Image (cartoon, rainbow, N blue to C red):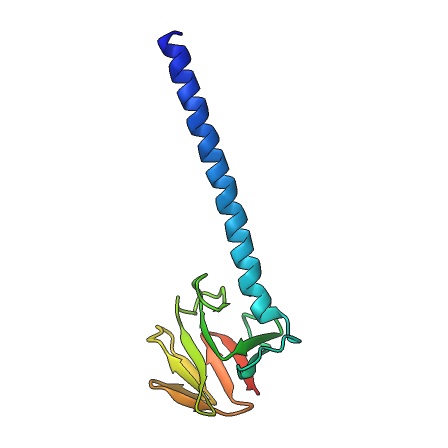
Length: 150
């Protein structure tokens, strides 16, 4: 066995392992994405023990440019932003990576702006602290407008 034959065998095994790791990584990402998205797309899901609410999308200037759903379901809590790690990912240029957090606690729904650059507006008022949400509150994130529904 020559040196080049040995080197060729080592490279072929090495690249085969890399290809299998790549395929495994792609399958894992697809699984995690489907698992995450199914939590927010299926409105008929009855998640026992968790309070549910929704953000209904209202038409805005950037609505046609964004890939928005008509309604985003919130089960107990949700992080909203541009990052893929957020529970609700909004691909819009005026949304921060982690823009707001919504959660249910002690019978109330809360919204907290997480220091977003373009801010959060509720019913025409820019918020800087945690606020309690009521049904039909209008929430503006960047140029996107939502209605909070219970």
